[in-house]
Amino acid sequence: MKSKIHYTKPSITELEVSYATDAARNGWGEKCYEYIHKFEEKFKEFTGAKFAIATSSCTGALHMGLAALSVQAGDEVILAETNWIASASPVTYLCAKPIFVDVLEDTWCIDPAKVEAAITPRTKAIIAVHIYGNVCDMDKLLAIGEKYGIPVIEDAAEAIGSHWHGKHAGTVGKFGTFSFHGTKTLTTGEGGMFITNDPVLYEKVLTFSNHGRARGQTKQFWPDEIGFKYKMSNIQAAIGYGQMERIHELVSRKREIFNYYARALTNLSGLSMNPESENTKNGYWMPTLVFDASTGITREQLQKRFSEENIDARVFFHPLSSLPMFQDCPSNKIAWDIPNRAINLPSYHEISNEELDRVIKVIESFIER
Ligand SMILES: *Cc1c(COP(=O)(O)O)cnc(C)c1O
Image 1 (cartoon, protein in one colour):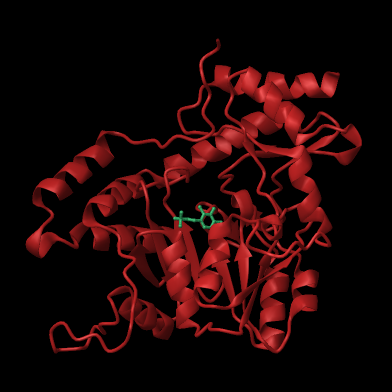
Image 2 (tube, protein in one colour):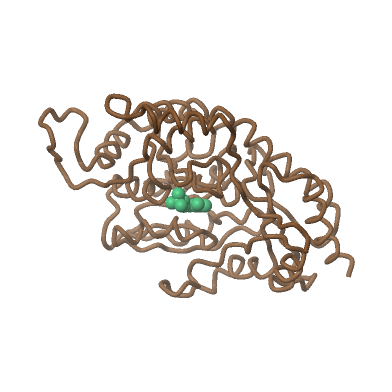
């Protein structure tokens, strides 16, 4: 049996270990927020955001951000059908309804024309998810948001290192969220970040994030409202701080891996990979391959061949509306079709060229049939 090629694996060096050890040994009492603040500072510096709040997950960051926009029962929030469920769950926590619209054939991101068509008097927000690092058409989405007075927010969980018009993903809309789950480009094991340039929204989410206790409140243990508990621990933040010192290396390796695949594969006919649209930069969290429908290649065939080679390739996101808790929207044709002929390729930091070549060989074998 050939050695296993995992699809993701974190890159943790002595640097992260030494910070985490320091946090575990010394980061208590007066120092209990030290790494959290240092991590937030570094994150602001890297993304250019004015404000940042470290959280226990991206899901939690989205939940607090949507709550701060007063999303509530009866409201609708528009997002793409092609997504991980974490982008939709927080909408349901607030008893609002996620409205799933179709994606674009080339970016696999939300189709702005479908967003505009789905707007109703109950629409409270539009969530732009930069899927696999691919940047949404923010020009059109922002114009729609402005026209109807609806905030556009960015779930940039998969988009660290991605840019739109020179701005880091997550800093373009009303607020942005990130995930540091173990599969993401930057990891703290579990964790997330809320960023915004809006001081009022920042104060609101900061208060929410501290169980409703406002910064200026002088009475001890006095919450002014019901808040949330989605804090990151100082030990996780220490790992995140170490990862931030290596962020350029982490992102550029993702780009290097993507380009290695792309050089070998994009001149083959019958397939496409993550695009990098004009005026954008792709952080390429997850190199992804979509076979043209005309090839007849199916997800089942891909999964079978990859598992025979002991390669852990991952299925493209299922359309969210096809999950049991939502109502099917098969009219979102592109999002319902692509997963049947697509696959995510392994892309962890330490993957070797020999391993990449093994993956490429499997793909070539499909094209040559
Ligand atoms: C990973 C991911 C999330 C969830 O992040 P958690 O930190 O696990 O809550 C949310 N949205 C997208 C687009 C993701 O890829």
